Structures are given as structure tokens and as C-alpha cells.
Length: 68
Image (tube, rainbow, N blue to C red; front, side):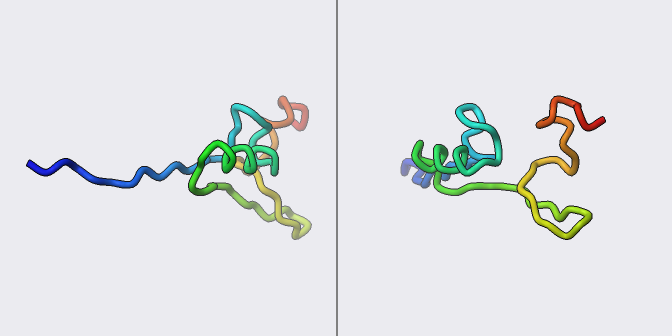
């Protein structure tokens, strides 16, 4: 029987969020430095037409609920 051959792909969802604040340039750079093959991020358009990188459509998780 032939051994299985595959290439492991490591995608950093929100960057290296255990080492830097998620969805920041620091988190993305750290993930790539740590060996990630690719980055995954979410982009939202704000009501005034700007684009932001954020996982959720609101800021509750990253503002400690201060915008409730």
C-alpha cells in the first residue's frame, strides 16, 4: 500500500490571535512568521462607506461590550 502524500496548508484565521490582537497587522505578520501559508480575514463596509477588517459585524467582542 502506498503512503498518503499531501501538503499541509496552514491558514491563519484572524492572524495569530493568541499572540497579538486579532485582525491587526501584528497578528497577520506573526502568523506568517510562525509558518502560516495564508491569511483569512473578514472585511466589512461601514455605514459611512469605509472598509474595516473585523470578524463580527459589530464591535461587541473587541470593545468589551462598551458600545452596547
